[in-house]
Length: 306
Image 1 (spheres, helix red, strand yellow):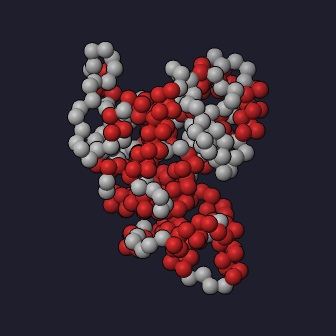
Image 2 (spheres, rainbow, N blue to C red):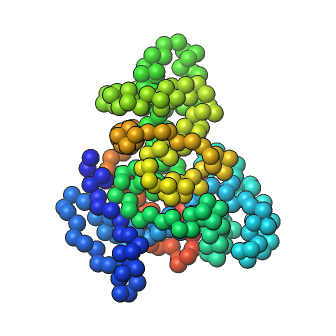
Image 3 (tube, rainbow, N blue to C red):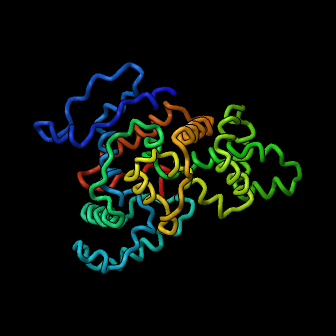
């Protein structure tokens, strides 16, 4: 792969703690092929916020909690906020801003503490994002799920190529959309051997094209499955991006080789996606994090949501 997969790991918490001023040590010299954004303090802040402030990107359905759960955190009566979150939770297309309009920095911090405690993540932090699959988890939710949908469609391209009857084509278009079908068929060959190695996902993707329910959850399963086996904390945080009702959605049981092949499919699925564009998307979010107030929510990216 290119720059995306060649990047060195992020700084560990131990390395940060060892710095005399308490901040990160001087950025080591990077090889010429490495992306410059890995040396950016803004990107490091983005990873920090992903670890520490899940309320900034959690699906609104996670923000609907009983007062009894939140009162010990000193949040008081949140019935009005619950009502607002309830109204925002009806967003199956993840089109809303990830930051609730009623959230204050203090509320955001306390809600993040509550979410981390809910999943026993208070002591699970990960700052090594050298793995490509883990870096994809830093993308905004719509971009990540769109990428996963395109990957699923690409794996199922032989099924799409076999459609002949107009009623069959119409049925598929009603589930995945005509634009995605046409885009997938226009893709050059190149992942057929990977599709064979990922037969379970390929078969599920083929069936999902005629089942809107399966198609709606398949991208989330793919997003969860591109993460390494030992990335439990990152995976648990990623689940916050998806509706609470899917909190136990299973990921695919893949070998490490299969996982890397699935990541490769994700990277080649979108015609305009390559290492540079992924880097640019992350860099945009990093700049947003850099410009956010201390402890406050990230400003919403245009078209971004959960």
